Image (cartoon, rainbow, N blue to C red; front, side):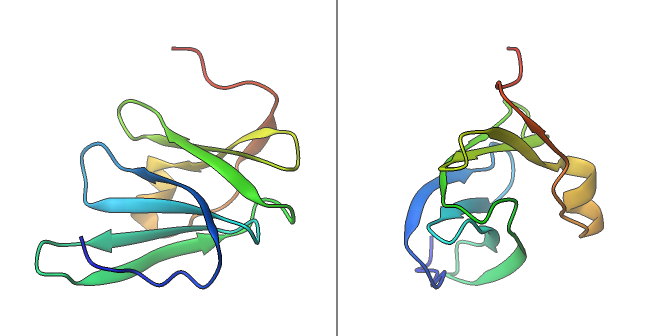
Length: 102
């Protein structure tokens, strides 16, 4: 995996279980996603800011369909669905107070 500059302190990262994508949770509250390959190339997939407070934890559902974030805002948020990622429209979905059932 290549070195990928993100522009702020990283609190957490999560790797997609089936695709070469890494998600980063930043001090600024941003969540940034990057695609990468074995040749050392990378590209920004999206950047969104579901909270003005820091993003301190990220988790993906087992199939990679949903990305969850938690942070200083004291909430767990589903911030991305696979459909939105494929269309390039990564947006905040909803706020919640608990992680998805497993």
